[in-house]
Image (cartoon, rainbow, N blue to C red):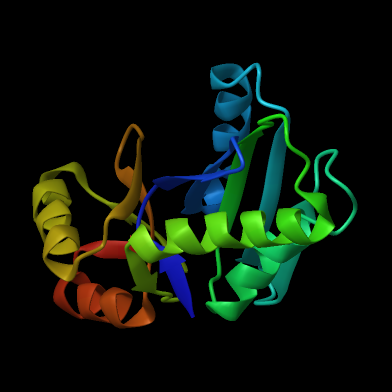
Length: 191
């Protein structure tokens, strides 16, 4: 399985209609959709498709035609995501109508082509399951822990500073967590 390594966008023009496809990690989907609706107030459609893993490692999928004829836009975009084995991924395609109707086959092709175009230009990374780890560390040991997290390649780090210690929550691949714990086990208190 693959996932996007950031926000990517490409534009496809078909018979004067403009299809602007945006590919993002799923956690940015709602924020992206809201910002695109503000950024493109004259756009006719905001077609969406997404795939992500829920807390039970089940694939959740969804799509929206957003006013296009049923099955001509959201579903073809979702099919492209499925075909590339993408997960934790969303695509939003902004359409400006160019004055010429494309027909159902033309819409399916245009939305599929827009999704494939943005995928071709995107950096796709292998999906690695992240697991959470929550622990406490004393203030004198915080610098050493931060260095160990950096050395282990753990970047999803949240800190809560409390009176007597720092509560740290991280998420990373199991291999990174095990390496981190092996290096710092004597300095941390697991929650």
